[in-house]
Image (cartoon, rainbow, N blue to C red):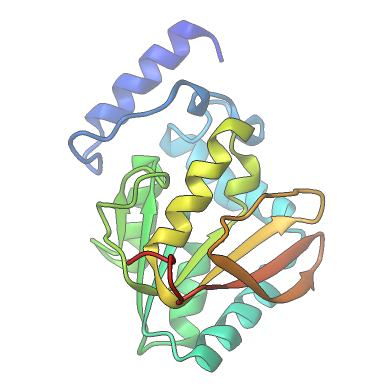
Amino acid sequence: MPPAQAAALRAALEQHPAAAEGVEYPGWYFRRWHFLPEGYFSARSVALYERVIRPVYWAGSERRVAELLAGWLRRTGARRVLEVAPGPGMLLAALRARLPDVEFRGIELSPFFVAAAARRLGEGVVAHGDGRDLRRVGRGFDAVIAAHYVGHLPRHEQQAALAALAEAARPGGSVVMVEHRWHRLRLPGELRPAARRAAGFSTVQFYRRFAGEGAGA
């Protein structure tokens, strides 16, 4: 993305009504994600993402992913669930429709996506913030979900993002990641593989946060 365009879009992000004070945007975030004209930084791009990019990108697998996630949350008795980088909140909405008694939260870096999620889910469900620093939403979640998120970060940022996912889950809780099959991630030591399911071109990977000594609080 040209520097002049990035500077203009940064100003638009900071002035957006859904923007929270103190949220910073890393330089690598300013790119034309999925060939969108302004990346994730305009109402036009968010609308194109919802109508065109997301259906193609998920390749018809979103319903199966939602069913797999809902089944896992039921079996594990999850009551508080966080999705990191939920975009416009479509997966959260699908999960909430299946599990109306579960408290769902989200955290998203683009205020344009936060506003779209608020229209779908209500105000305050998705907070504005960086998925690598989850202090804005807290910790102790029964399950933390990241769908098509970590694998698309720069490699030098992936470990911090994975560590944040693990820290947000309570000891004994779950971290669930949806990634394309070709993404290979190095998981923090406190996450133990629990299950793995295919969903189109993606894989749904279920982990439990180790509750023993050294797992953290």
